[in-house]
Image (tube, rainbow, N blue to C red):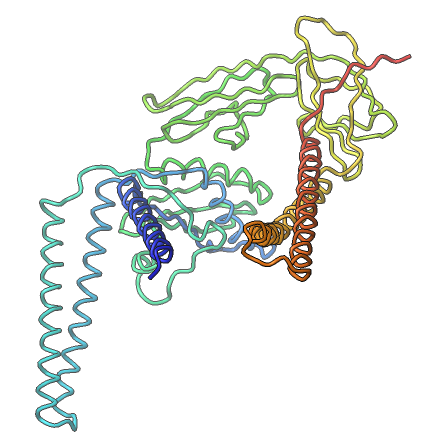
Length: 496
């Protein structure tokens, strides 16, 4: 084996060894630093109906589906020792039963050997094999029974655990319990930790909703909405049920929040969910919540707060009034629809009353969008301004996509030309070096061959250089196109 071949093989072995070490370290780090968090799976099934008009029977599907959507805001559940202990014992008991069933199958198979047509030697051999398996299963049953005893005594769970709360099938489907067996068995088999069931009942033309949360281990909490609600008050029904279910599912105590909001017509959101009536006490589960408040003509307010020590909280909110300025917006010869924070102001040219602050707006002309910045200097008191928006003339997304394709094509052509250029240059250099060293005779054929390869090398290098310049040119054009997505500053426009 030549030295070069040995070096290449040794080099490849070193690369493989190094790669194996890297993968091993990544695997160990992943095992060492990954944190396993159990999940608590919540599902809902179709509600039962009693004397509900046919036109409203689809509420049996709609209400549980909407409840799951509203309850998706809960990220975790505190699992109490009683629930965790019960689930662990149920898992061990199922394991013991499965071993017992396997043992019974083996015993039946062993008994059937007496009636088989096999020879005596074969029957004895099969019987010994079955007896070995039965002994193994009996050992496993004994170990599981010991674990059950230990779980009830020295291994008994005594601490709360925080589990991630996830929706069954991402909340897209309602749960269907198995026809055979108990509900607990069905939930355990499908890995469902809690199931929302319910009944819809017509009471004198009003809807009464009964909701039951079954955790699958014998403990259920019934939440009954007793207020008579019209059928068209579905949102209020969902809101009230959700308010009762949130602390129950999160397994934390509920707290009441009394809001005092100025202005009174402001909208209050808790964890991105709008409070229907903030003049009434709002029930939430204890812990950290995000409160957001907005009102026309006032600055948006947001704050995180922890509610866990008291039963009732009072929250006073006073929004700051926004000062406005009249601004005439012009987009030159192109008209565009003007938006600020998704609010539509009209088509340019126009005069808009906007907040007296630096803001990002959007001008849309057909499929061409332009993001712009309205600059505001707080040191200057403006009564009226005239601003010119430099709008894009071409669809930015299409332009970027077109330039991206051209850039990739130019890069691909450059890659294709490089091997030809390098190989032809190497061949031409070797032939020229051999000629200069006197290793080849100076004949017309040799000279023509060297000249031909030199020409090929020069042409291929020229093509590669040209393609390289083209790639840089296309890269600059791509950067310029991508730069169109950066918001432009609206400039002061002085009308003649």
